[in-house]
Image 1 (tube, rainbow, N blue to C red):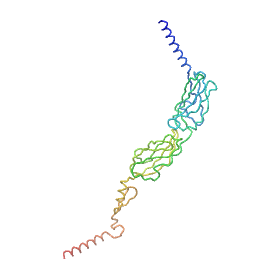
Image 2: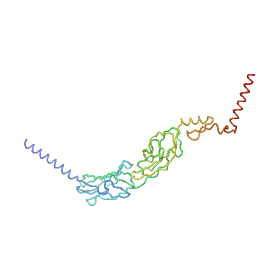
Image 3: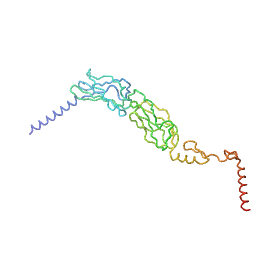
Image 4: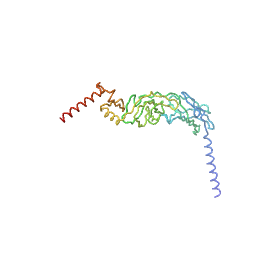
Length: 283
C-alpha cells in the first residue's frame, strides 16, 4: 500500500512536470509593427518579434473592423526567415477606412505550439468619402402628410456612417443619425411640421467627412391644403402659396374694387329705390 502511494505521487509529479514543459514551450511573441492605435496609409509594415517562443516558424495575420465589410480579412501566412521575427509589407488600400481595426498574428513554432500577438485601435486612412448624391426628398419637393424619410446614395466602401443635418429651421433637432447599408444611407421616418426646410447629408469614414449639396423642401399637409382650396374658392380670398391665404380688401378708398363706382353713389341709389318701393306700397 505504501509503495502504491509513492508511485501515485511520482505519477502526479510527472504529469505536473510535463504540463510545465508544454506551458513553457508555448512562449510569447510581440507585435512590433503596427503599434496599437497606429494610422495605416497604403503600404504598412507587419512585424512580429519572437520573445520567448522556441524557434518561431510562421505567423498568420488577420485584420478586421466591425464598422466595415472587412470584418475579418486574412492577410496571409508569413514564413519566418530569421528565427527571430516575421516581417513583411502589406498594402492597406484593399481595406475600407475605419478607426477600430484589430490585427491579430497567430504564430507557430517547429513543434506546432501557438502564440498570438494583437494590435488594436488601428486607423486605416486611404480615402475621403465621395459626396452623397441622389438625395430624397429632392429639391423643391412638397410633402403632404408630414412623415418624411431621408436617404442618399454613397460609396459604401468609403463610408462607415452618415448624418442628416438641417440648416436653420429644423423639426426638433439640427442633426439625426442615419443608417448606413451598402451604398445607401437612410433615416427613420421623421414627423415634420409644416414649414420650409433646408438639409444636407454628411458621409464619414470615421476620420474624414464629406457633405452633400444643400437641398430644400417643404411640408404642406393635406388637411391644411384642403382648407386652402375651400377658402380660396370664396369671394375676396386668394391663395398665396402653400397653406397661406390672403383676404382681399372689399373697400378701397371709397370705391367698389374693380368698378370705379363710389360707394356713396350706391348707397344713394339704394335709398331712392327703397323710397320708391315704400311710396308705391302705401299710396
